[in-house]
Amino acid sequence: KAGVTQTPRYLIKTRGQQVTLSCSPISGHRSVSWYQQTPGQGLQFLFEYFSETQRNKGNFPGRFSGRQFSNSRSEMNVSTLELGDSALYLCASSLDRDAGGYGYTFGSGTRLTVV
Amino acid sequence: GQNIDQPTEMTATEGAIVQINCTYQTSGFNGLFWYQQHAGEAPTFLSYNVLDGLEEKGRFSSFLSRSKGYSYLLLKELQMKDSASYLCAVRDREAAGNKLTFGGGTRVLVKP
Image 1: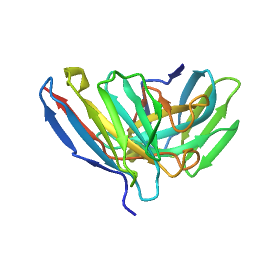
Image 2: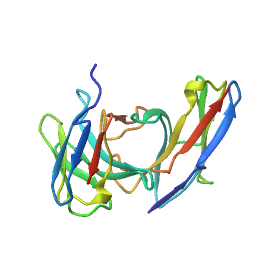
Image 3: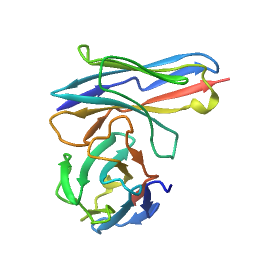
Image 4: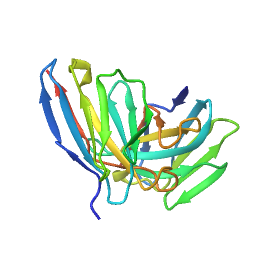
């Protein structure tokens, strides 16, 4: 079966612009989580969506937002981009509300560079 | 809040064993995960512990002691392809669902 698909793979944006990233989870998975990965901070949780509702939120400013559609696909948006937003953005999906023994399945990520 | 510590880097020889330790402090514990991440690739799920003890999966084993806030990932019969970063992550009981806090990762270098 298809894995978690993230688009685009690479993106270059200018400071002050906004960006939208997309994530299509594995078919049947209803939980989608977003993470930011940087060399200095590692993997940091942004938010999680389950059945179109935001269930958890990390400690990121309001410029970071997301949503989930009825087909479980999710998007995240970053407005007013800053240089520090340059990172690998990873999406992860899980079968149900509790990623226990199955863990998360991560997508390959979107590499965002802000110049 | 949560705090997770793991060594930054480890080096081992092909065929040997390496143990990667992870210590955590959390206000509420609801499971510990280990992931492997090769450079430039997505993390892949290795193991999950929620009760004390050892979980074995082939060459990989993971151990958990909740009272000590401690886990380790044991990699046996190391192969060159095991060179990667290994991430320890804890799920917070107080957050419903899948909010994981990750450690900084341990980069393992396997030498011939």
